[in-house]
Amino acid sequence: MRVPEDLISQREHDFQGELNRMQHRDVCKQTRSKTRGMLSVRNFHHICRRGVSSVWRGISGRAGQRLDIGGIYPPIATPFTQEGDVDYQSLDENLWKYDGIPFRGLVVQGSNGEYPYLTAEERVEVVRRVRLTLPKAKLVMAGSGCESTRATIQMSERMASAGADCVLVVTPCFYHGRMGSRALIHHYTQVADSSPVPVILYNVPANTFVDLPVDAVIQLSQHPNIVGIKDSGGDITRIGLIVHKTRSQDFQVLAGSAGFLMAAYSVGAAGGVCALANVLGQQVCELAHLCTSGEWDKAKDLQYRLIEPNTAVTRKFGVPGLKQAMEWFGYHGGKCRGPLQTLSQVELEELRADFSSNGWL
Image (tube, rainbow, N blue to C red):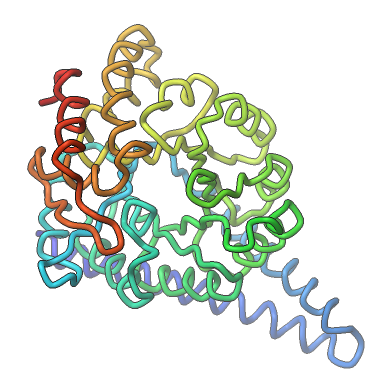
C-alpha cells in the first residue's frame, strides 16, 4: 500500500480540480463585468463558453498536448456484501490484483460497475476509494453520465473532486427519440465547458438505443476538453471513419469491447475499454501489445480465443456472467444488485464452456 504517496496524489488532484474551477469562475466573472447591461443572457452564456474553451486551450497548450488515454482499461465491477452494500474491502483486493497488469487505468462506475443501481453518493465514494488505492501513474476514468445535462455537470464535478483524471459520459437515453445530433452536441458541449477534467464520449447503443451520430462526434472532437470516445457499437467502418475524420484534433478512439479490439486497432483505435479485461486482463493487454507492435498473425490467433469468452461476459450473460467469471479467476465478483439475477445452472454451464473451449479454464 502506497498510502502517503496516494494521499499526496489525491491532494494534487483536488488542487488541480479546484484550480480549474477557479479559472472557470474567473472567466465568467470577467465576462459578466464587461457585458453587464449590454448583452442578453443568451449572448452572455455564449461568450462564457468561449472563454472557458480558451482556458482549456491554454491549459492544453502549457501541457503540450491533450490527455493521452491510449491503452487498455477494465470497466471494473462493483462488489457488494451479502446485505447489498458496496463491499469496499473486496474492491480493494481486486485493485491490488489488477496492479500487476499493465493497464493504462481503470474505468470506474461504467456499465459493468452497475452505476444505474448505485446512489450518487455511492458512485462518488467508489471513485474516491479507487483513486486512493490505485497507483497515481494509472488513470481513473469515472463514469459521470446522467440523464439531464445539469445532473451530468454536477456529477462530473463531483467525480473530479473525488480524484478522477477524466470522465466518461454516456449518452442520455430516456428520451432517446429526441437524442439527435443537435441535442447531443449541446449536451456534451455544456458538460465539457464545465468539467474540471477531460471528457470522453461514451457510445453504447445496445444499452441506450442511442447511436451517437458520427457528425456529432466530429464536431465535438474540436472541443479542447473532449479528448476521445469509447465506442461499444462494434461497427468497425464507423470507428475507422471517426479516426480518419478526427485525426487532426488529437482525438482518440477506444474500442468498447475485446471482441473487436484487433479490428479497432487495425483502423487506428488507441486502446480499449474491455469487460473481459476484468477476467483475462493480461491476455487483453497482450493482444493490444501485439497489435501496436505489428505482430498481426499472433494477434489474430489470440483474438480468436477471446471472442467467445468476451461475448459471454457482455452480450450473452452481461454483468452477472462477468461477475461469475471473475470468481473463477480469483477476483471478487459476487452477486449483482436487483433486479439483475445470478445465472441459472444451465447458463453457468454455458459460460464455463465458452471459457474452457478456448483454453482459459
